[in-house]
Image 1 (tube, rainbow, N blue to C red):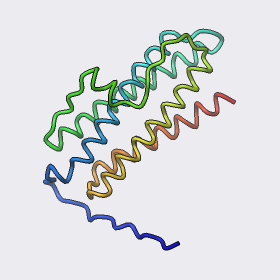
Image 2: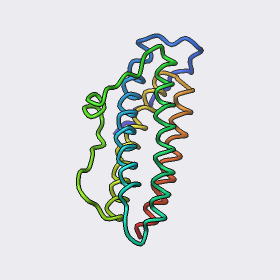
Image 3: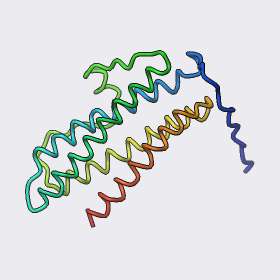
Image 4: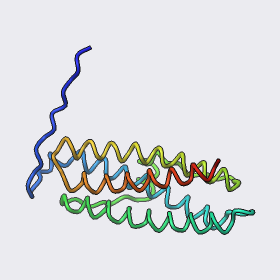
Length: 164
C-alpha cells in the first residue's frame, strides 16, 4: 500500500480569510459546546458526590470545572480573533455537543468514569481542531490546542489511576 504524503501548509501571517478559518471556527464551536456540557456535569458532580472519596473528588471536580471555564473563555476568544462571534445558545450547545448530560444518581466511581468518557470525546474534538489549524497553517490555534491536549491527557491519566 502506497503511503500518502501529507502536505502541511506553511504558517500564515496575520490576516486569515473567512474561507481559511471556516473549518477552524466550526471545530472550535463544537469543541466549546463539548466543554460547556462537560463543565455543567463537573459542577453537578462537585455538588453531589458522596461517600468516603467526597473530600478528594469534591476538590478535584472543582479544579476541573475552574480549568474548563477558562478553556471555554479562551476558545470563545480564539473565535473572536477570526472576526466571528461565538454565539451559542443552550439549545445550540446541546445540538452541537457530543458530550451528553447525565440525569441519574451516580456513585463516585461512576462520576469519574463518566468524566473519562467525556475526555475521550473532547480529545477527539481537540484533534479535529488541531488538524483544521494544521491544514490552514494557523500556528496560534495549533499551539493553543496542543496545550489543551496536554492538559486533558494529564487529567485522563490521573483519573484513570484513581479508578484502579
